[in-house]
Image 1 (cartoon, rainbow, N blue to C red):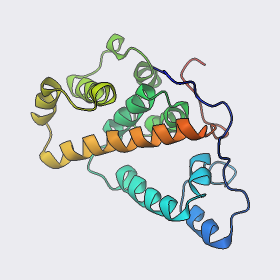
Image 2 (cartoon, helix red, strand yellow; image 1 turned 120 degrees about the vertical axis):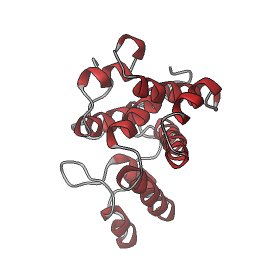
Image 3 (cartoon, rainbow, N blue to C red; image 1 turned 180 degrees about the horizontal axis):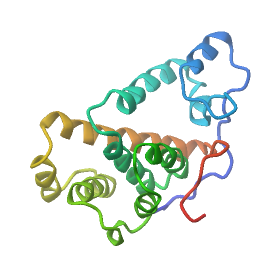
Length: 189
């Protein structure tokens, strides 16, 4: 899963005491239990214009997209696992549980998912993520299975969600963004 060692400390720490304009942008992001912005957003705040646009796009995918929450979280969790992003996996473990995934399903997404009795539709989502993360393209077989049950707009969104969270995972890994308080790591660790 991990071919390049991940930093154990932040390479760029989250912004502390941001200037008013940056603080305003951070107010529109998700916060931890103590009210401070999540570490991902605090790190992105070093580039406020990028943070603002990142937050709009990510917020759209999470809150206004076509995918049901459970399906979206299967995709995000599997991409996070495939990219070795403990931060992504941990944050979306919490979201996935709220969207109806079970702890057993989440544990399966963190490892060899073949041992879990996934539905065919869920298995197709997992296979899509595995294809994209291993070969940068969805195989014909997996695409045909997805296209048999999803409209073109949903197919587009599936690939975009997987790609966006692959980008996010690479950012998190490279920057050494640390888990926020109360966020789990990998299942069983």
